[in-house]
Image 1: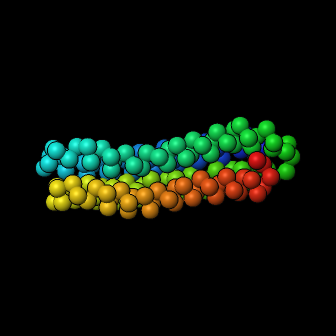
Image 2: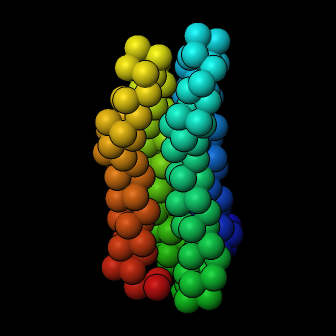
Image 3: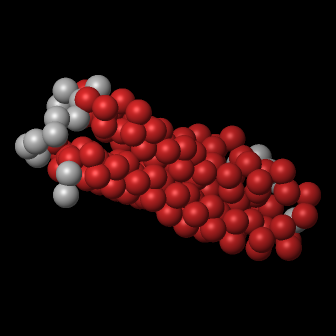
Amino acid sequence: MDPASLATIGGAIALAGGLAGSSIGIANAASAGVATLSEEPGEFRNVIVLSSLPMTQSFYGLIVLILIVTSVIPNLPATGGAGLQVLGCGIIACAAELLSAIYQGQVCASGIAMLPKTKGKILTNAMMLAVFVELLGVLGLVFTIMALSMLGFM
């Protein structure tokens, strides 16, 4: 398999991890949202805000794919293990985005479950705690870009 194909697969894996993690994270949070809304329909806005937070990891995976396709592949040597190196970077991004989104969804689900009991006052605290998990997704993106750069592909 040529290096460009392996690199493209790496980018696709990064995007797939972000999409899968976001889907699972949003589903976890939205499930809690359905239960919360059956108890307190007035919390709809807060449920939407918290349920949507795990979506950002999809964008991080897309950014990795775009960088690989537009910046890395044109500079990729035709021989050697460069394609495998980029594939490895894509796998790292996949893991970071997948796990970050799933666990962020769990944090958001907990916050959503507490909305009726706190009359919505938990929203800011829940968002702050979810942002801590989000940071790992951001770091996954940054570390992937750094690795690609340090390998000389960007």
